[in-house]
Image (tube, rainbow, N blue to C red; front, side, top):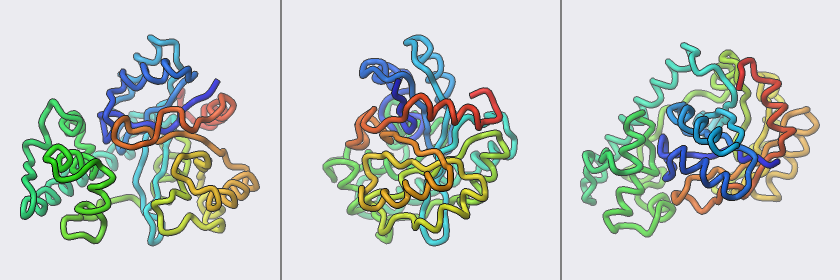
Length: 283
């Protein structure tokens, strides 16, 4: 009875549709999964129906990019009320900011690459599908450059042309981590800190950073993740347990967009039950 609680679809920066995601989850024997696209709930209905048709459990979720002090922090939100006006208003602002950022990065890229905005929004592409909800991000720009033959894959594009600090990079607008936690809780959801010790980070979250976030309502930490460095995550896992926080496992699956494989890291049904018990909505 294992669940993958961090996955992405074509509604943001994944390469599989919500239905295809459910098919893959069923094929590898998962009991259920959560769709956690960036700043959008667009894929929930499709994922829920596809999961039901295959006898899978579905936990609605989302991933928010936030800022905590000087660092970028990703926050997973489970089981919140999709109709919450305040949260949806903030999500709409974030999606529009994503679209404006992507447009400006394309403008900068055009100085040295054949990067076309209309091609980015091609309805037959993953980016085009995401454009319907405006949940665009750097992965879509990377796909555009890979398709043009400039880079091997997304990772190659991220390490070079799309790297932070480069001439084409534009920072993204975010919520503060504390504001995001408060918004998720006000919408009846359960906030979990995603991959706090990922190897791509300059340094992991500090152990002493968890307690203040827990006091704000942080409910859990994603301790089992393919990109968490073992030596970094161990003390954070111990502190999460000491604070009584959930410890979750998930793959951060993006289809062909990342090497992470569906079900690579998972959570037991007991964790899902605790999330549902903590949510103020019927998740």
